[in-house]
Image 1 (cartoon, rainbow, N blue to C red):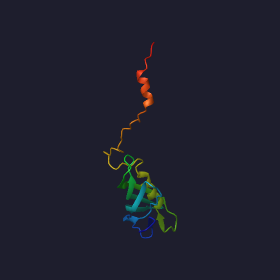
Image 2: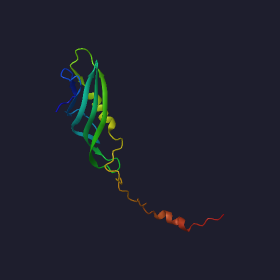
Image 3: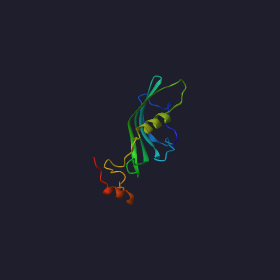
Image 4: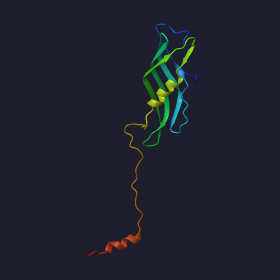
Length: 145
């Protein structure tokens, strides 16, 4: 699996074409967000003069930790409207979309991931105050006004 998302320019059809594949471009060093597999992409790329227009979708699988209950769960992050326009220089052979794709995926990650909308969260137990016999003396106290 490639570790960069490169678009070769020399072989592009002038009407544009669809490119599909998978690239291992997400390298987060986070305890609660772990990507697995690669970013799956389906992109329509087309040259317009000195500009490359890229539109399509991206997907990445993640192992996340639920912000309510603390359990691990798997989810897939989808970017259905990935769009980028890249200026092309003369004699340029390829365009590297790795950074753009990586940022789109990361920005789509949920801020507070939840394993299920109905997740009740961590089970709350009623805290019982320890009994302290010293306070029992106040039960017999009479206050006059």
